[in-house]
Image (tube, rainbow, N blue to C red):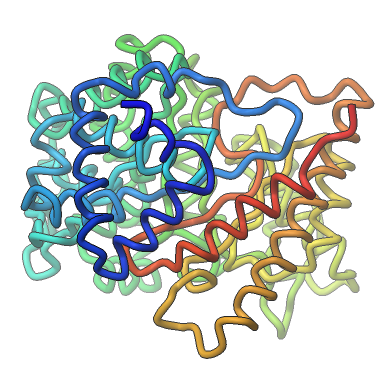
Length: 445
């Protein structure tokens, strides 16, 4: 057992995964032994170890990598992996993080597919890939959307999610984070992405009615159930489809955000709801101010600001107002994802101004081995990017500590966040990220 535990010590696990990825049979055998031990609960004590409190942390989503490993080692299909055994899912996902040297453990699952399937949408589970909705068979249309009722939360998917949350909380001692698609993204999955965009442009009132119906019939009862089952639960809505870069800043503000604001504002459990993956921080070029502003009062429930379109505005001010709006939807921390292209220094400035922790995302393509033309350049680039990120987060964190502002107990990523690690990721680049954060992210005592 001691020899297996050694692979949980960085960078031994990273090196083992690199050898497995290269087709090494011995590495495959060792991984098999490791995952057998994890599923038997042998590494449970390690999962309760707290992440370092004196350093910037690395977190990630890597369930696709774990799926590929278990498919190769055990022939496990996608549906078996995600829905077959929640305890196995949690233990193997945590082990994969440990193998990569990630100490701040998190739990993710295929949030959009799970949300849609809970409502009855047909979902496809390819053998070796994450599930996705059947785009040829939408659950609701213009004629029947109002018939959509509150789903059975004792069904397979909601129960799997709850068992995963309970297992994760028990194994790690952390507060659980439930992942649910936000109203706009869920509407897009059950109505059709393109179909919803078309009615968004031509029949906005219908979209508002559909989203309000989802809030009343799905989100209020679901959030209440989760909050009753797990009194300390955080509820993260994922809303990639409702992001500014996909539907535009105005539609984002007018349609995607209001249902979330309503849930945050009107319910006692609303203060534990947040959306951290709204992508896009660049206002439109032609009329940057008009793109990002709707007249009205500055208020959490409306998410609007009192500014007139067309006035001169600096890039710093423009981003500041983007951040303010996103903070109304994710109040505890500021996040810059790979798709957000404004300068890093401006994010640091605004995080300090608002007294909020900073999270910085590294995109999947930055570590994708199939995208690498020159491996030496890739290593230098990822090391420089990670160095900049670790130093930026360290700067913000030390300021917050010095000024007594770092009091949030939010369990979600506040550090360097690798947005996805899968079987096509270059594990040597992941190792560089972990090493670089450990070196440059050490907080001053």
